[in-house]
Each structure stands twice: as C-alpha cells, then as structure tokens.
Image (tube, rainbow, N blue to C red):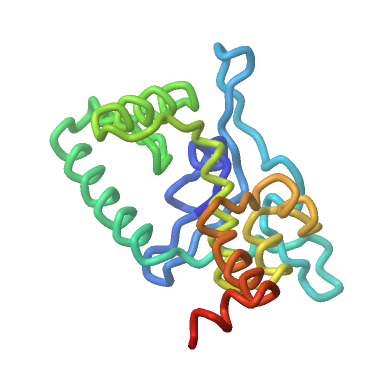
Length: 194
C-alpha cells in the first residue's frame, strides 16, 4: 500500500476498521540510532491523512484510507491469529494494541520488521529490496490512471510533485508503450499493418 515502514510499525488495531475496510494512519514507531524505539505522530500533517472539519471545530479529523482486498483479507486473518495467540498464552500475552506484533503480543520494531522481511525474501528466492522501496509502488497507481490529488493524499504528501519526484519510477515495461508510439513516427507501425 506504499506505507512508510514506521507507519506500518506504528499501526494500532484501533485505527483499523475491518468492517468498513479502512485504516487511519496517524502514528509511527521508529528507532533512533537503531537502538531506541520512538513512538510519535506521522512525519507531517498530510502524513496523518487528515481532513479539516467545518468550522467552528478547530481540529482536523483523520481521513481513513480504504484497504485493498488482499490487505483487508490479510489483516482479518492476522487479527484472528493474534486472538488465538492471546488465548493460548493467557496472562503471558502482552496486549500492545499494535497490528504488527510478535506471537507474545509485543510490538515489532523497524529493525525486527526488516530482519523478518529480508529473511522471507531470501526464503522465497526474491531479490532483496529495502522496505521503504515499497513506496515506489505509486508508479503502479500512476500507470493505472489514479489522479494526482489522490496519489498525493495516499502517499501522505501535500504536493503530488513530491510523490512523483521520489516514488514514481517507471521501468522498462512502463516505457514499452512509448517505444510503440515512436514506431509510428518512423513508419514502423504502418509497415507492420500491411
């Protein structure tokens, strides 16, 4: 979904609405010096995916993001698994409230998330990529016609230029349509039809 790793680690179950298939991004859980866990608000107000309320109310209300079907399915299954783990461990289970939690309920750190993700990539024979690079999945949204204002909102940016500058990265297959268009300039497309 293009979330920052700190947003994934900071996600609490109270921010997930499985019934309406939405999630509110408002907190992060990161590390300082790769040693100390820091829990805080998102990087910026747009990162909180907030929507201002009509006056006279002074505070903005978090705007939930809709969950794609595979993510909704995974979260639903993971919620059930955490309930089973809590039941099995009883009082030994830590009720942290975090979505991303160990079998005993303790919240993951970014360092632990990375280690597990890299181990999984290795087990599956996948090329190792940084977790933050998942934000480049915004390229998929752009290529499939998602409007700029929606793209920026999903990424947690005030300006789509930021999103496009850092996270939209066309690859060879994305450029294939342009190559076909160039064929027309040189008569290649016309020759192919004859």
